[in-house]
Image 1 (cartoon, rainbow, N blue to C red):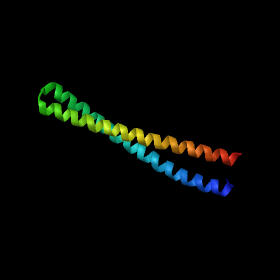
Image 2: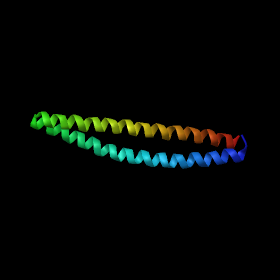
Image 3: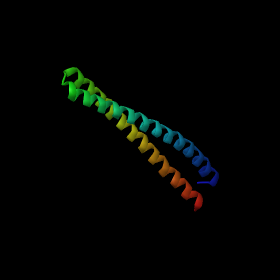
Image 4: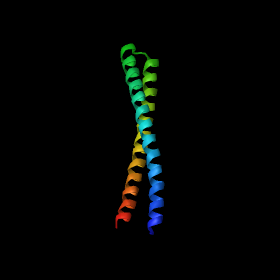
Length: 94
C-alpha cells in the first residue's frame, strides 16, 4: 500500500476513533445515571414491597442492562479502531 493511501486511511480512522471515544464517554455517563436509577428503584421495591415498585425496578434494571450492552458495543468499536490505527501506523514505520 502506498504511503499516501496509508496516511489518508490513518486520518479517516483517527476521525472515526475520536467520534467513537466521544460516543463511549456519553454512553458511560448515561450508564451511570441508569445504574443509579435502577439501584434507587431496587431500594424502593424492597422497602415498599408492592408489585408496582417491583415492576418499576425490573424496568429500570432492563434499561440499565441495555445501556451496558450499548456501552460495551461502543468500547468494542473503540478497540477495533485502535487496532486499525496501530496497524496503519506500523505500515508507516516499515
